[in-house]
Amino acid sequence: MKVRIYKDAEQAGKAAATLIGAQLIRKPDSVLGLATGSSPIPIYDELIRMYREGAISFAQATSFNLDEYVGIAEDHPCSYHYFMQEKLFEYVDMRPDAIHVPDGNAENPQAFAAAYDWAIERAGGIDLQVLGIGRNGHIGFNEPGDHFIRGCHVVDLTESTITANQRFFENRDQVPRQAMSLGIEAILKAKTVVLIATGKDKAQAVRDAIHGEITPQVQASILQGHPDVYWMLDEAAASLL
Ligand code: GLP
Image (cartoon, rainbow, N blue to C red; front, side, top):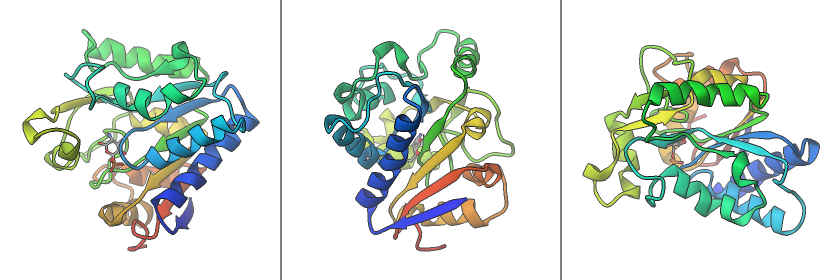
Protein backbone atom coordinates (compact mmCIF):
# COMPACT_ATOMS: atom_id res chain seq x y z
CA MET A 1 0.00 0.00 0.00
CA LYS A 2 1.21 3.48 -0.81
CA VAL A 3 0.95 5.83 2.16
CA ARG A 4 1.27 9.53 1.31
CA ILE A 5 1.27 12.16 4.05
CA TYR A 6 0.41 15.83 3.42
CA LYS A 7 0.46 18.91 5.60
CA ASP A 8 -3.30 19.33 5.79
CA ALA A 9 -6.64 18.16 4.41
CA GLU A 10 -6.53 20.56 1.49
CA GLN A 11 -3.14 19.32 0.29
CA ALA A 12 -4.21 15.68 0.68
CA GLY A 13 -7.38 16.41 -1.29
CA LYS A 14 -5.49 18.16 -4.08
CA ALA A 15 -3.08 15.26 -4.41
CA ALA A 16 -5.95 12.74 -4.46
CA ALA A 17 -7.73 14.83 -7.12
CA THR A 18 -4.56 14.78 -9.20
CA LEU A 19 -4.61 10.96 -9.14
CA ILE A 20 -8.25 10.99 -10.30
CA GLY A 21 -7.47 13.61 -12.97
CA ALA A 22 -4.61 11.45 -14.22
CA GLN A 23 -6.99 8.48 -14.39
CA LEU A 24 -9.46 10.51 -16.51
CA ILE A 25 -6.71 11.67 -18.84
CA ARG A 26 -5.35 8.14 -19.25
CA LYS A 27 -8.83 6.66 -19.72
CA PRO A 28 -11.55 9.26 -20.42
CA ASP A 29 -14.29 6.62 -20.17
CA SER A 30 -13.22 5.55 -16.68
CA VAL A 31 -15.67 4.06 -14.23
CA LEU A 32 -15.27 6.04 -11.02
CA GLY A 33 -16.43 4.86 -7.62
CA LEU A 34 -17.30 7.96 -5.61
CA ALA A 35 -17.67 8.62 -1.91
CA THR A 36 -19.39 11.16 0.30
CA GLY A 37 -18.57 12.55 3.75
CA SER A 38 -16.52 15.58 4.63
CA SER A 39 -13.17 14.01 3.72
CA PRO A 40 -13.61 13.93 -0.10
CA ILE A 41 -14.88 17.54 -0.32
CA PRO A 42 -11.39 18.99 -1.02
CA ILE A 43 -11.02 16.34 -3.76
CA TYR A 44 -14.23 17.46 -5.47
CA ASP A 45 -13.29 21.15 -5.11
CA GLU A 46 -10.01 20.48 -6.87
CA LEU A 47 -11.62 18.32 -9.59
CA ILE A 48 -14.07 21.17 -10.32
CA ARG A 49 -11.13 23.57 -10.57
CA MET A 50 -9.28 21.22 -12.94
CA TYR A 51 -12.43 20.83 -15.06
CA ARG A 52 -12.94 24.60 -15.28
CA GLU A 53 -9.33 24.99 -16.38
CA GLY A 54 -9.97 22.52 -19.18
CA ALA A 55 -7.49 20.02 -17.75
CA ILE A 56 -10.02 17.19 -17.39
CA SER A 57 -13.46 16.15 -18.59
CA PHE A 58 -16.04 13.76 -17.16
CA ALA A 59 -18.02 13.64 -20.43
CA GLN A 60 -17.19 10.00 -21.14
CA ALA A 61 -16.92 8.82 -17.54
CA THR A 62 -19.39 6.76 -15.52
CA SER A 63 -19.79 6.93 -11.76
CA PHE A 64 -21.17 4.67 -9.07
CA ASN A 65 -21.53 6.04 -5.57
CA LEU A 66 -20.70 3.89 -2.60
CA ASP A 67 -23.71 4.33 -0.41
CA GLU A 68 -26.95 6.12 0.48
CA TYR A 69 -29.12 6.43 3.55
CA VAL A 70 -32.34 4.44 3.73
CA GLY A 71 -35.53 6.35 4.42
CA ILE A 72 -34.72 9.91 3.46
CA ALA A 73 -35.77 11.46 0.16
CA GLU A 74 -33.22 11.94 -2.63
CA ASP A 75 -33.74 15.70 -2.42
CA HIS A 76 -33.19 15.80 1.36
CA PRO A 77 -30.15 18.03 1.98
CA CYS A 78 -28.47 15.20 3.96
CA SER A 79 -28.97 12.54 1.28
CA TYR A 80 -25.91 11.40 -0.62
CA HIS A 81 -27.74 12.06 -3.90
CA TYR A 82 -28.03 15.68 -2.85
CA PHE A 83 -24.43 15.79 -1.62
CA MET A 84 -23.03 14.59 -4.94
CA GLN A 85 -25.07 17.09 -6.95
CA GLU A 86 -24.06 19.92 -4.70
CA LYS A 87 -20.39 19.05 -4.31
CA LEU A 88 -19.52 17.81 -7.81
CA PHE A 89 -22.05 16.90 -10.48
CA GLU A 90 -23.65 20.33 -10.77
CA TYR A 91 -20.30 21.82 -11.79
CA VAL A 92 -18.83 19.27 -14.21
CA ASP A 93 -19.78 17.74 -17.54
CA MET A 94 -20.80 14.31 -16.29
CA ARG A 95 -23.78 12.91 -18.28
CA PRO A 96 -26.79 12.54 -15.93
CA ASP A 97 -27.44 9.00 -17.20
CA ALA A 98 -23.86 8.01 -16.35
CA ILE A 99 -24.33 8.89 -12.68
CA HIS A 100 -25.39 6.12 -10.30
CA VAL A 101 -26.18 6.43 -6.59
CA PRO A 102 -27.84 3.62 -4.63
CA ASP A 103 -31.57 4.10 -4.11
CA GLY A 104 -32.12 4.10 -0.37
CA ASN A 105 -35.88 4.02 -0.93
CA ALA A 106 -36.01 1.12 -3.37
CA GLU A 107 -39.24 -0.84 -2.98
CA ASN A 108 -37.31 -4.07 -3.15
CA PRO A 109 -33.88 -3.22 -1.66
CA GLN A 110 -32.43 -6.70 -2.25
CA ALA A 111 -33.34 -6.66 -5.93
CA PHE A 112 -32.01 -3.12 -6.26
CA ALA A 113 -28.73 -4.06 -4.55
CA ALA A 114 -28.21 -7.04 -6.85
CA ALA A 115 -28.97 -4.88 -9.90
CA TYR A 116 -26.51 -2.23 -8.67
CA ASP A 117 -23.70 -4.79 -8.41
CA TRP A 118 -24.61 -6.10 -11.84
CA ALA A 119 -24.60 -2.60 -13.35
CA ILE A 120 -21.04 -2.11 -12.05
CA GLU A 121 -19.96 -5.45 -13.57
CA ARG A 122 -21.63 -4.55 -16.87
CA ALA A 123 -19.80 -1.21 -16.93
CA GLY A 124 -16.55 -3.20 -16.71
CA GLY A 125 -15.95 -2.79 -12.97
CA ILE A 126 -14.61 0.23 -11.16
CA ASP A 127 -11.36 1.70 -12.47
CA LEU A 128 -10.73 4.00 -9.54
CA GLN A 129 -12.56 3.89 -6.21
CA VAL A 130 -12.52 6.94 -3.92
CA LEU A 131 -12.97 6.05 -0.25
CA GLY A 132 -13.17 7.82 3.06
CA ILE A 133 -12.91 5.91 6.31
CA GLY A 134 -15.19 5.93 9.33
CA ARG A 135 -13.85 6.53 12.84
CA ASN A 136 -14.68 2.86 13.42
CA GLY A 137 -12.74 1.79 10.31
CA HIS A 138 -15.78 1.40 8.05
CA ILE A 139 -15.53 1.89 4.28
CA GLY A 140 -18.74 2.89 2.55
CA PHE A 141 -21.18 1.79 5.21
CA ASN A 142 -19.54 -1.60 5.72
CA GLU A 143 -19.73 -1.51 9.48
CA PRO A 144 -17.55 -3.48 11.95
CA GLY A 145 -18.91 -7.00 12.30
CA ASP A 146 -17.96 -10.64 12.35
CA HIS A 147 -17.59 -10.98 8.58
CA PHE A 148 -17.07 -9.05 5.38
CA ILE A 149 -20.19 -8.70 3.19
CA ARG A 150 -19.52 -9.30 -0.49
CA GLY A 151 -22.36 -7.59 -2.33
CA CYS A 152 -24.34 -4.38 -2.16
CA HIS A 153 -26.64 -4.60 0.85
CA VAL A 154 -28.79 -2.79 3.39
CA VAL A 155 -26.99 -2.29 6.68
CA ASP A 156 -28.00 -1.26 10.20
CA LEU A 157 -25.78 1.66 11.16
CA THR A 158 -23.80 1.29 14.38
CA GLU A 159 -24.27 3.67 17.27
CA SER A 160 -20.79 5.11 16.64
CA THR A 161 -21.66 5.92 13.01
CA ILE A 162 -24.98 7.48 14.01
CA THR A 163 -23.09 9.63 16.52
CA ALA A 164 -20.40 10.55 13.98
CA ASN A 165 -22.94 11.55 11.33
CA GLN A 166 -25.22 13.40 13.69
CA ARG A 167 -23.32 16.61 12.90
CA PHE A 168 -24.94 16.73 9.44
CA PHE A 169 -28.49 16.55 10.85
CA GLU A 170 -30.52 18.77 13.17
CA ASN A 171 -30.51 16.16 15.91
CA ARG A 172 -29.68 12.51 16.55
CA ASP A 173 -33.28 11.33 16.01
CA GLN A 174 -33.12 12.49 12.41
CA VAL A 175 -30.07 10.39 11.51
CA PRO A 176 -31.25 7.38 9.46
CA ARG A 177 -30.69 4.04 11.15
CA GLN A 178 -30.03 2.15 7.93
CA ALA A 179 -28.14 2.65 4.70
CA MET A 180 -27.50 0.83 1.44
CA SER A 181 -23.82 0.22 0.80
CA LEU A 182 -21.64 -1.33 -1.81
CA GLY A 183 -20.08 -4.48 -0.39
CA ILE A 184 -16.43 -5.37 -0.13
CA GLU A 185 -16.25 -7.26 -3.43
CA ALA A 186 -16.86 -4.30 -5.75
CA ILE A 187 -14.42 -2.19 -3.72
CA LEU A 188 -11.71 -4.87 -3.80
CA LYS A 189 -12.21 -5.41 -7.53
CA ALA A 190 -11.59 -1.71 -8.25
CA LYS A 191 -8.31 -1.45 -10.16
CA THR A 192 -7.09 1.45 -8.00
CA VAL A 193 -8.30 2.64 -4.61
CA VAL A 194 -7.69 6.19 -3.38
CA LEU A 195 -8.59 6.48 0.29
CA ILE A 196 -8.56 9.91 1.91
CA ALA A 197 -8.42 10.32 5.68
CA THR A 198 -7.86 13.60 7.47
CA GLY A 199 -7.98 14.82 11.03
CA LYS A 200 -6.90 13.22 14.29
CA ASP A 201 -10.28 11.50 14.75
CA LYS A 202 -9.22 9.10 11.99
CA ALA A 203 -5.71 8.36 13.28
CA GLN A 204 -6.58 5.17 15.19
CA ALA A 205 -8.70 3.71 12.36
CA VAL A 206 -5.92 4.50 9.86
CA ARG A 207 -3.32 2.82 12.06
CA ASP A 208 -5.50 -0.26 12.66
CA ALA A 209 -6.33 -0.58 8.96
CA ILE A 210 -2.74 -0.24 7.75
CA HIS A 211 -0.78 -1.99 10.51
CA GLY A 212 -3.38 -4.07 12.33
CA GLU A 213 -4.67 -7.54 11.61
CA ILE A 214 -7.04 -8.05 8.69
CA THR A 215 -10.37 -8.31 10.43
CA PRO A 216 -14.01 -7.46 9.74
CA GLN A 217 -13.91 -5.47 12.99
CA VAL A 218 -11.86 -2.96 10.97
CA GLN A 219 -13.39 -3.24 7.52
CA ALA A 220 -10.74 -1.04 5.86
CA SER A 221 -8.05 -3.57 6.88
CA ILE A 222 -9.15 -5.72 3.93
CA LEU A 223 -7.42 -3.17 1.70
CA GLN A 224 -4.13 -4.78 2.80
CA GLY A 225 -5.09 -7.43 0.26
CA HIS A 226 -5.48 -4.95 -2.62
CA PRO A 227 -2.54 -4.40 -4.99
CA ASP A 228 -3.03 -0.70 -5.74
CA VAL A 229 -4.18 1.41 -2.79
CA TYR A 230 -3.18 4.99 -2.06
CA TRP A 231 -3.69 6.18 1.53
CA MET A 232 -3.89 9.96 1.18
CA LEU A 233 -3.44 11.31 4.72
CA ASP A 234 -2.89 14.59 6.44
CA GLU A 235 -0.37 14.75 9.27
CA ALA A 236 -3.10 14.42 11.92
CA ALA A 237 -4.60 11.25 10.43
CA ALA A 238 -1.08 9.81 10.05
CA SER A 239 -0.05 10.74 13.60
CA LEU A 240 -0.29 7.18 15.00
CA LEU A 241 1.55 5.45 12.14
C1 GLP B 1 -19.74 8.13 6.24
C2 GLP B 1 -19.75 7.45 4.85
C3 GLP B 1 -18.40 6.95 4.48
C4 GLP B 1 -17.38 7.97 4.88
C5 GLP B 1 -17.29 8.04 6.38
C6 GLP B 1 -16.42 9.16 6.89
O1 GLP B 1 -20.68 7.67 7.11
N1 GLP B 1 -20.69 6.40 4.68
O2 GLP B 1 -18.37 6.65 3.11
O3 GLP B 1 -16.12 7.61 4.40
O4 GLP B 1 -18.54 8.00 6.98
O5 GLP B 1 -17.03 10.41 6.76
P1 GLP B 1 -16.28 11.76 6.97
O6 GLP B 1 -15.36 11.94 5.82
O7 GLP B 1 -17.35 12.81 7.00
O8 GLP B 1 -15.54 11.66 8.25
